[in-house]
Image (tube, rainbow, N blue to C red):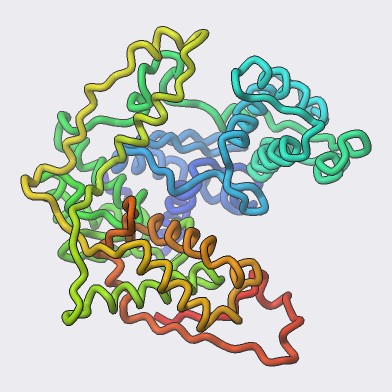
Length: 454
């Protein structure tokens, strides 16, 4: 890397800009906040060179947008799009979002919500299995979530009216939006023409047979994109690169984060909160129960009197997910010649060890019983929605731990990954509300009063 000669007094500003760009990929006048774009523009030259050299990423900066075009080495289903109300996007919302972008690309400077809905409904009617009916509340809600996602990023700005009123009653409500065309065009610019792909694997990089500099970029990308990089998921050459002080130092210098090394791998520790999309430990019922469950898991794994079984587990890309996506390619229309010739010769050489790595295994029954016991003990402090839904709470907590790469789910339970041991000494202090506080909700929006101390 050609080291940028950044003054020590300005280094923190540069690192904040790098973290914002790596975390968001798109920065506009309003997203993720109003101070981000001026910060990125200040360091545009340095960031453009460093992100390309270190990670192989391309950065484009204009007066109104900054767009990072990453290189993907694997699919990641742990960071879905979310609505302004934190609702996870489903397939319908993703479809409406894509069709809304297509409609906005052909629109003028303004558009009403009902007009945009008409365009999306027209496009959707041409796709088998998809439609948008403004008479169905579920369709209207999904469409408004997609529009809200665009609005949060500055592609649309509400000029008049209320989207919520339209969602409640499209005959009585209406909303008018200003369209920011540079943001619309920056949002969807795939690096490859989708019509020319034979498989979703074509969206992924394949550096396995390329030179060492590209392998080094692959390792650096893993460090900034994954909560933990385990040695077991890397090739022998990549393991050697991950052990180099120089490579870790380059990433630390660029991001301002600290690399924490363990025998099993490396994690970048983000105390700033500007690169991580999930803070952990954190506040809220899910984070608190996750931390409590970690303590129970650690106790079970370390119990020498009742040793838990171990099972092999692969930490590489999920081929099943790739196959499912390939199977979803339409077999009619423009995609027909592509769907008939799906590439199946993709080989993931990430794991070269002849003997499978094993991890402690805990079955579903143990997990459910443990969460139920935690609910019985601390349930009075949980958010109201989780107090009577131990099953839903278990699902969400396991999803959080999976996203953090602390566990790996399997069909009948979970595998305990090494990074979970980092939190085994955590102390959870639960504050019980006083009687006069029971009706006070402003202090804690999700109803949790737990407090984690690590």
